[in-house]
Image (tube, rainbow, N blue to C red):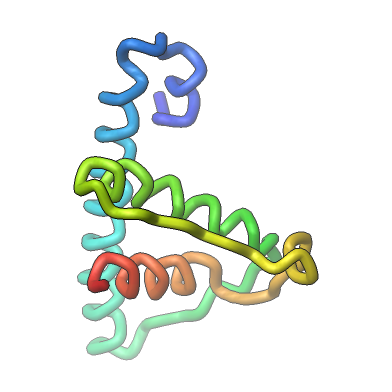
Length: 108
């Protein structure tokens, strides 16, 4: 069962632990994807997967990953999206763009 399906079944007492688990899984997944992409680049089989997605959805996903970590370290994390691009749909490789954003934020 995926974490998203479990999210609705968790009581308030365990919600903190769910956020820790979810954030840790996302970061680990990102690390594994970085390593796999590096291997694909070296072998010449790396491909861009263009999809259409809302820019805000990507920001929300990245925010969800780092929200708990920032709170735990007592660091302010604030994602702001200009209203003019709030509902903007983008045609790009969402997975790679998300990797770049995760790497930038985790290294800052």
